[in-house]
Length: 508
Ligand code: ATP
Image 1 (cartoon, rainbow, N blue to C red):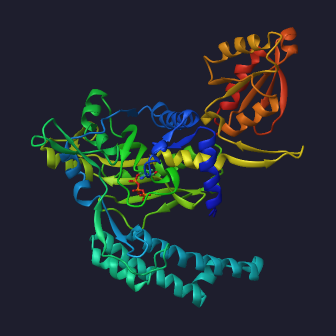
Image 2 (cartoon, rainbow, N blue to C red):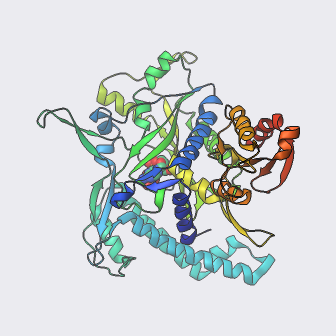
Image 3 (cartoon, rainbow, N blue to C red):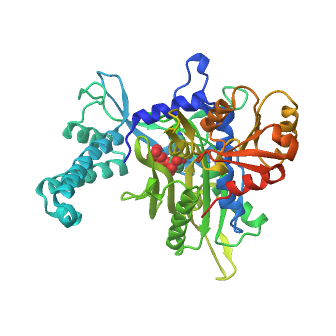
């Protein structure tokens, strides 16, 4: 497991220097946990979004997309449970004045105990060599057993506290575990308080007549309230899905780790409507499909893992996260949830409108069950960036930073360089670019030596660089250089588009 704050710092600096991500309102010293995507970042983000959309909508006949509003009727959030239950427990340390999520403090404490167990296991594995049996060791070693018991004991108090929104139980747990503030080391804590994560604003012209409305904290509800409209107008038959990408807003208590946890972020969600009783089959199907989507990008499989939830939200009967090995360690990237008929039934109740589906095969009407896949676009962006960031020592003694982005996601696919600014080379290079740009995002550059231009494009992850030289004028060939191998080849101009398209293909 990587735990490399240094790597995260490098990625943040690189993202700024090469036009991927800027702090929002930077000239005013920024706005906490809000970021802007810059010229290269917005391309990369769009490509991730498109890649998701293609996999979900284009590749599935029974999935369609929508684009619903950020503002919704306030009762939507009452029905969904967000008004009453979308809270995080927060606690302040009186000495450092730092604010924490109470559940996260306890979880971090458990992770430390977990790390002790891992260390013990690693030590024993080394000592016993091939003969080591991890299961046996874990079930017999007294120190490991004591720590496992400790963790179980904590979970038995934490989960009921979360379930019952019992703030005193959180406080007692933090005190009993003697958890100290990571900043000040002090155990001088305030009470634990509930904090609703939804942002609100007022709609309407006058203060008296205005209605308080919320900025959506998830895109899913826009799908639920439109489900019957889509089903009817699209003549969709169960099982079918509705996909959507868009902004969501959460007033996170502790927002850090760059674009991992933001207050304004983007989600890519798909709700799949199924027959009651068939949800587990689809839940397994979507777990498998979503993992395949991640690895199809060529990111190593060992960077992903499933984390099945022990503790389920009241509306779910199964839930798992796909975690990614971020520079901060394995963390949630995507959630796959079997949400039963919780949302649609709640909307039936609050709206007084029937949201039933008539199943022609069963000749029955029912409220469908829902399996959802929900991924944060910004977290995927960070996953892709952290996997791609590579520092390389080259054979000639130089070094380079290269973003080994999956070519299909790279902001630019081809950079085109005339060798010099003279002898008609720029005109020829522009002519090539004018033909290529219909098919691919191209970048034209004539400034600096070729080597420097290569470095600049390595740093933003451009998979191909084309150099136009004097020979090009004679025989219509160019050199094409591949980013990762740095291999150069001479090819005919009319072959460029094909070579690039081939390189962008995703291999499953
Ligand atoms: P976490 O436990 O990290 O707060 P969550 O379980 O609340 O996340 P969901 O409500 O399941 O998250 O949202 C689905 C996805 O949206 C997450 O897997 C994550 O990728 C993304 N996401 C959620 N909150 C944020 C945020 N504040 N910033 C960026 N992405 C987010």
